[in-house]
Each structure stands twice: as C-alpha cells, then as structure tokens.
Image 1 (cartoon, rainbow, N blue to C red):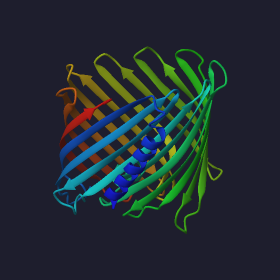
Image 2 (cartoon, rainbow, N blue to C red):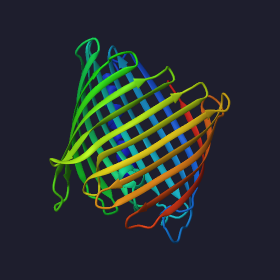
Image 3 (cartoon, one colour):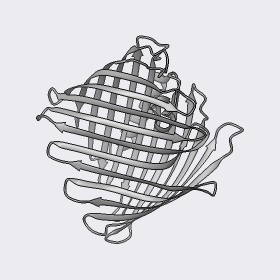
Length: 369
C-alpha cells in the first residue's frame, strides 16, 4: 500500500507540473540521487539488559524537479527509504516515502509561497518523539500545508506572515495522533551588513485526535538577532517568553554559530523551547548539537557529529548520539562514506541503554540534467 500511495502521489505530482506548467516554464532542472547503505546496529531495540544486533540494508532514491518562469518558481520532489533487516523482530522492514510540492510567486517588493508535504518516518528518528524507549515498529506519518507572505516595507525593513497546518498520525506505540495549527508574524530590520535584529510572535494550537486529551495552545514572543562577525563567522541568537494555555512556562531561546573556513566547517547550536509531541501535548525540549568537518584533500573529508536532547512532558527523557565519519568523492557522481555512531537513551522511568552502529554508504548524485 505504501508503494502504491508513493507512485500515486508521484503520478499526480508529475501530471500537475507537466500538464499545467510545462508550456509556461522557461527553464527546468532535474536532480536525481540515490544512497545504498549497509550497517550493523548492536542494539536496535535499545534494550538496557539484553542487547541483540542486526544488519540493515537501506536504499534511498530521490528525484527533484525545479521549474522557473520569470519570477515564479515551482519545485517538487519524491523520495523513498527502503529498509531491509536481517532480523525483522529487532529491526522491521519498512518503506518510508516522502513527497513535496512548493510554489513561489515573486513580485517587486513581496513574495508569496505555498508548500505541501507528506512523509513517513520511523518514530525513533522523529526528533522530540524519539526520546525514551520507542518501539522499533512505530511509524510517524505527517501531512502538512503552509503558506507564507513576505513584504518589504522599506529599504531595510521586512514583514513576513505565515500559517501552517500539520496532521500527525502514528502507526504503533502509545503515541497520540494530533494536529497543529501554527500562525507566525515576524518583522526584521537590516541594521547593518552584519546585524539584523527581528521580532517574532508565534501561536501554536494543539488538537488531539482522540478523546480524553484536551486541546491546548502556546504563545511565544521572541526578540532575535542574525549576526555576522566576519565573512567566515556568523550566527543567530533569540530569546523570549512562552505560555501554555495562559500559564507562563518561562524563558525560551536558542543560539547558533557557524564557522566556514577554507578547510574547516564548524556548527554549534543550543536551544530551550516548547514543542508539540505525540505524548499528548507540549513538551519542554533542551538540545545541544554540533558538527565539525575537515577537508583532508579535494576529495576526502572527515567529520564529527554530536547531539544531546532532554525532553520533559510528565517525566524526563534523554537521548544522545555521537558519530565520526569519513567521506571520499570517487568522481562527480559517486561518493563513499563510512561512519561509526553511538546512540543512548535514558530517563526517569527507564534504564540507560546504548547502541553502536557501524555503516558504509555508496551515494550517486546527478544534478541539473
């Protein structure tokens, strides 16, 4: 059924674009990519006492189509992650499709965009819902549509407004299906070439799809700054206040920094925020993550990725990962990547568990054909 839905979505997507816009579009660009992965996971179920390992093979093809006509842009894409395991009890076979269509219309002083998405992903890979012991068979399904209007009010001032609807459903596990409606308003002012302060107001309404869980909402007001120190160093910082159902939940904020040198690239991020979750409402999330990579030569790169997340809904849960990888660009189209990653989970009512994952990835990319 998943494959049928995927190809049905692809057919509608291609038919829509080709039949409606092919005559008008001035230029078309196509990107095709695939990844072939073989990895060994020492503890797919994240069992604290009886870890057992399994091999996984993953095939991830994707296709993107971009059309431009004057100031208008049309972008669509489809991808599928097909996973096969040596032990379906420890790591079930799964097909995870993703489809999107983006439309952007530009005017002299403004632009308007509409975005639609459909995706399926293992719940344990779904951010806030990945905390704690998540069943390996659980799948998170997302359907979303959003719109954004941006208007230049002056030479330096820009006002943007956007609204989004997303429906989340789970297959497996004890998560709660829900929908969220998000409204956001932001004003930014380019103070200088290096500093752009902004003000942002956001309202998120959480609507559970089952009885017994009440609707809730959160309002957040934020002051932020996009800054640039040099041509190689830039970042963002913002801080604000949030409330849930008119009850204040304290200060929210985030900070990030990016260094992009000739051979080195370093990113660091830290955040404390309120986020909708499948646990039945809004969860407080603290997260720190970073990455570093070094170009050993024109074709060889090495890197490290780190992440630690702590979530609180009714109890505290934590998950973290640390990985090191080596990548080699064989030629213009083919690449090879090896990696070693350790994942961990812990919490107030669960025991700490670890998993070590060793893998190799062959990638193929063909751009603009």
